[in-house]
Image (cartoon, rainbow, N blue to C red):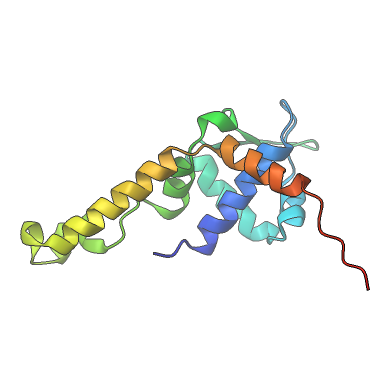
Length: 148
């Protein structure tokens, strides 16, 4: 299974928003793009999807930007990935049984379903706040100093 660039960049952008959002002050997309080294145009597409899923909202105007629609502790990684990548179906036959003639008698299909369910359960158990906190911890560590 591969998570697309949209999923990876979207998660990084959401972590950035969770870390830098203070109160009701919106965060500029250009600031997220610069900090995360992601194209602002690409982030616009990602944030349109996230806004459609109800995870972020936009504030228009000179001091506009983006805000999380609810606290980061109430947004799961499952919600983010489902919005950006779709449901966690590792193979097409799990999502659309008509694509395979083997149907209900296939042990491999059961395996793919079980693995997808476990991934989904793991993503539901981690909040954006959990990941943002971990990122802050990692960022607070002092970088090793190398002398020549």
